[in-house]
Length: 318
Image (cartoon, rainbow, N blue to C red; front, side, top):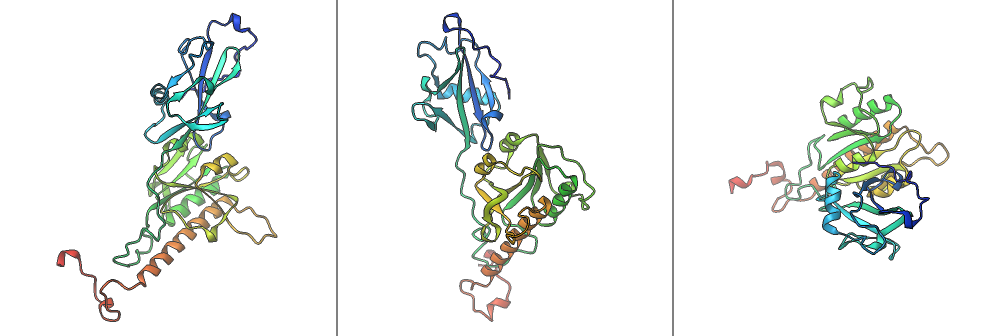
């Protein structure tokens, strides 16, 4: 994707001296900011000189430009900022002249936002259990999957400790955003040899490549208390760096925002590796509790005390 700067054009010329107007599309992934948006500079003269109402782009052409820039349009749908509405609308019929902002006499910019297309609803771990058998999953067996990682992590010991906990508590994968993965001495089981570990160059890279239909759970102070949180069946837990955490834009992009409770009289901030371990342990405890609750329910046509000690019959025996 191109990251051309649009702030360096000379806008001192008058309109009469302009041969054509440059048009720029700036698009943002969820959780990103305009400052970190990606831009597509249209070839000179694509939309004429910008003076005679010919600044319209139909939906197909706009989608084609995004595809050429690497956007997966099967996963992401597009909203455009419409100045006449003072808000974001679906791309619909395309970009009209009212969607262009006059950055300068020779430059027009149109703002686009990408949002994930609706996916099948992710159920809770309890909903995912088989009500017909009512048998609790074996210890360590997961319902759904989850991954966990850190955005801009600073302390290498914390990273290694988190990877170790992730492997031990059943994570399907681990990841880092904004830094390269390195083997850490604190990761004694060498988790990268057991589960996939991904590295993402920045937030946008993470967004583009994150699992489809997995729910993002941002972990930061001020969120839903962990004890009141029902973990999604498929989840990606995102922890912030030790010093700056996750910013507001990132938290808004997450479907859930959770936090660990404290006594209220001491420091509200936990070590990032400890935070991740507590969250994963809470998920496992609640999964086991849900499984035990379902296992205690009577099975259809089962006589408690008689059939309950017999092995379940397979469908093949009928």
